[in-house]
Length: 153
Image 1 (spheres, helix red, strand yellow):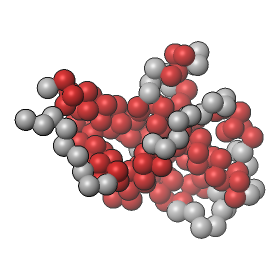
Image 2: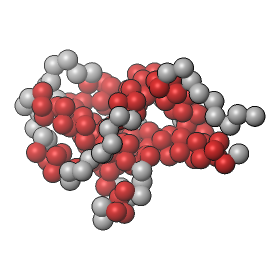
Image 3: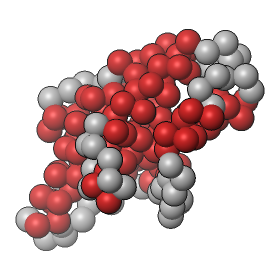
Image 4: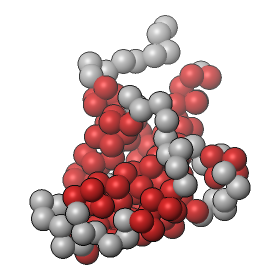
């Protein structure tokens, strides 16, 4: 019996994991939020370094969204915080910050983006990411547990 069941593409693999995480955590994401999370997870699998900068500094430097660069940095802050809070919660301890650090900064980054005047930005999506941040973290944590259980069994 093969314990590993591979999907045909990395996106399909992430989608499967996100769906398992939703089921395990007892949440159902809106399709647009689910798609965003899947694409974000896929994008960060190629990056070997997650947030070597102090996240709060990046957040504060870009809190006033005056340019595309500010918007991209705030989005990256929100994405990093989501991934770190959900998939790597022990990073908070190593960075000497509270467990809520990534949650609060990530939520606020998405909240600011949801009300920014930036064009070509799906404001409602970023509001949903802000509003569901705690649920998203729970889903990512559930994904870790599901994956670990599949490996052990």
